[in-house]
Every structure is written in C-alpha cells, then in structure tokens.
Length: 314
Image (cartoon, rainbow, N blue to C red; front, side):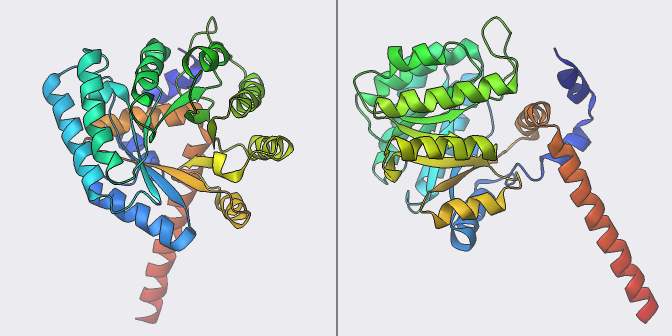
C-alpha cells in the first residue's frame, strides 16, 4: 500500500462523503436520470449511468443489482444520449461465472430492445481474463456491448490480440483506477500515457471503436491527432470523462468539432459502495480534494457574506 492509499484510508467517511459530491449523481436512479437529461439538454453531453457496487458475494445482493439495472434500462427513454455501465462482479462473476453470463444476457436482451449500449467495466486484474472472455462470448450474440481496457497493465496489448480478434469491439480505453503490483503494471503516469497512445493506435488499426477515457488534455489531443492522421472516421471514437471533474472548456471545444463527449455518471443506493468508489478516486487524483475544499469554502464564504449583508440591510 502506497502513501496515498494509507493517507486516504485514514480520511473519515464523513469527509469522503463530502469529497464524493462532484463525482456521484446522488442516491437514486431518478436523480441520476435527471442529471443525465440535464447534461444532454444544457451542455450536449452524453452519459453512461453506473450503479455503484462491486465484488458482491451474496446471491440475494446480486439479484438486487440485477433488478436495479433492469429498472434502469426500462427507465431510460432512449439510448440516443444515455448508455449503461456495470461491473461483472455485480452480476455474479466473483462467485459463479455462469450466473453472471445469464444475468448479463437478461440485461443485454432488455437493452437491445431500446438501443441502449452496455459497457462491462474493468475491475482489479484478478478479473481481467474472466471479463474479457465473457465479453468475447457475448459479442457473438450482441452488438451493443462494450468493455474496458487499461493502459496501466502490461498485458493489455496482448489482450487486444487474444480477445478482440475476429470482430469489431467497442472499447473504453483508460489508464485504470486500480493500483496494481509493479510486476504486472506500470507505476509511472508517463509510461501509462505512452501505452495508452500505443493501444489507441493498435485498436484503430484493427477497426475497433475507441472511447478515449481520460481527463489529461495533452493525451486527448495527442490521440485525436493520431485519429486524424490515421483518417479514422468520427463515428469510431468519442471522449469520455468522469462526472465532476472540471473540464468544461475542452468538453465544449470537442463538441463544437463534432466529437461526442460522454460523462460517467455513477449513483449509489448504499454509501458503502460510494465510499469505496470515492476513496479510489482520491487515491488516483488527490487534487479532487483540493477542488472540493475550495468550492466548499467559496460556498461558506458566499453564505456568510450574504447573511451579513442581510443583517446590515435589515
């Protein structure tokens, strides 16, 4: 465990909950759907909805996750600007891969009828092979399913050849939020970014769709320039970012260029899952704590000065 992990582990849940504000839409599907509609109507941003939860071990809990996702799909009016993301362990991968496959097919059948894309999120490296195997199997039957590749891992270039041959995949390419051992993963951000660029090229060379999922503006522009040089049609890529990360200017700049921008919009029905998600974000990007603290102080200042002005004029 690195120093960041140790530091974040010491932060009380009450403070983590405060930091989670920008990253998490709320504690209900209705709030998440409302946020997605608002982002589309006011900023032209597409979204992917995610129910926070992972590593679930109890079948009853898995059924609850499945029911919530079925309700999510039923509640989405159109797949035009909203997609769905989920973690395979939410559907049972950690305890029964066959149960996971059955549950995923139920979701994909429901989503296909409404033209909604589903992305299988990538979790810790322990689940990488199982997730990619499941994805490859599902792609033989469904066309509206994608998954995630992480440039942090050494293995990812080989995974492209082993698991994505013979069909056109829909890939969210990201650095990866899970801290992995140095024996299997890069430890320096520059190495991860360079590998990200190499992987984007490799995926496009093989005809796959690539969602460029990063907040690093230099890396985004580098990949978009590569797409231009390779003459990749704009319908074979988009840019994805997390809800709450302040990147409004580049998001609108890309939109004006006709490049779709999609935000990852998570919500939680339990704060236990929200805490785990938020702590990982803090480890990966501790600057979010500074960003949230600054906004909080500004709100407190506006509240106090506003109250003071009222007292003066009363």
